[in-house]
Length: 198
Image (cartoon, rainbow, N blue to C red; front, top):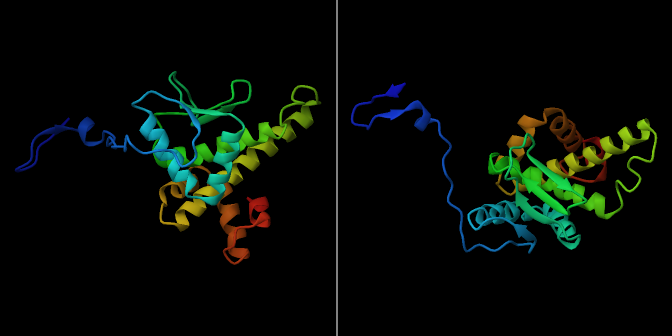
């Protein structure tokens, strides 16, 4: 289908709805000097995502833990159906390059939290427990990582970078609602109790 408007050039609907290509600062340096396994083209985007997350105190902490643990940061090059992943065996954190940056900021926080969990010994007993214990451990790790992500996204929203929080709220409404309800009950102060409720 083609759109024709007076005084404007003709363009297809595909072009109208195509994602806008963002320009990244190729000279920017990461606030946390993590090891990146990225192409030269991908590196500025990864730096921007890292630097956005690092503006959150929670995000900065998780980035530093992942860095100190020796995790490498990169993008998936094969097709994937997830926004990101953290691999203990390969010591890497990867993001889906097809996802928007606002989503990847929270995803990076989530995956860096998993890196910290692995550094602190999570999964050493994986496969050695009964099924019930395995499920409980996995769910606890995911809950902890999601709480870390919503907290970092909230901190960024408080500083004016609202995109990651809006995406988190849309993607995980139940978690965000529990977080925001607990936050209201705690007079807007994020603490351990608020994070536990999330």
